[in-house]
Image (cartoon, rainbow, N blue to C red):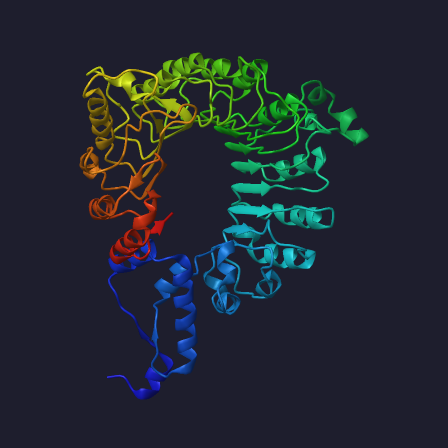
Length: 522
């Protein structure tokens, strides 16, 4: 028995099976979870026997706070009451970080993102880092010309667990300050210097020996001076330089020369530099383990990608949207990395032909994501019975522009046979989660995929993992019966992008929300 006095101090917890909580966390929007936590916390104060959430549930809810969550009413009060439970904190431009910095219990943050905070006070930064520097694993901030750099350096030596460091939009960045940070934290595995003006220097100080200033040390250690010490390598595995202003390839090479374990290089749209095949040849000598590259919208020479694919066999991720990629480059990629390739983004590579897309589908068994938007794929090229997509057991994300050119003559029934072949290949991709289809980018052709029940849509009933479908670019209206079939056959569907029939818009919307009110329809 429990006395009334004890009931006043111990709220009645909502006891549900752990599996049910997992489903709630998986499907309920995060903002709703936070609102529920705020309500339950408020109820505790007002009633003697409130219905509250267990400590486990509270810890799961307050584990992560995103920048968008700061708009929730009462969030700051909830943060102050549950500051000891926060592990991942991302701030919006107007987040009131100052109040949170005074909470002595807020000392368990492992992932901190304050890059968007406006007018960050140095004292606030110092208090936050004093409480949490020892456990930080990921840190993202925007350094300005004030005392932020000195404050950060003062705490870096305590960040023994730091693995990810993002220093983007850095005002007044110098090569000495970059070197100082890297020497203090050589254990960093992910480094981002994107959106910075790095053109005035080449980071040659990273590959030069430190200057010995003590004259007595020089006279007593002549032998050691003759054989300079080997520079300590960094543990950086992922380097991000997105949209940085870089004039010299030497800057990248000097930084990478201290990163022998580099596996991922991301250079999206860097200004002032045109990467050459010579750069790739030197990079291969210092970073032989590179398996993931992202050169989206990056200026390169004509032979750059051919050299890249030949020099780095076994690539796992290649993102080259908007590049000058040629069909010959794709053949080299398939020859040297076809068996290992997992992610390929060749969107808007307008120099590629349809047979390159077919070669990718037939030559990459481990492919999990393919984005070929803007590259026309003619399914007539795969009518040979031996033409099978070998990626069907792995692919989860697929974006294809499928069309039949209008200028060609098709025999009776040929279009239907081609359509059946396409549906058959797609139906084998049972792990597909995200499917986006278009009807051609450069040449609007015969609408081969109408995604209607009359032309074979029911063959895709095997795609039980489907969560997102975007078929607006097929230029074909989708009826209510098709949408009802999709909602019934694909229970995980969360987002649906279709071209609606104007007269059936309201009826279709009612049909969608009758089955699932949380689905996103556009």
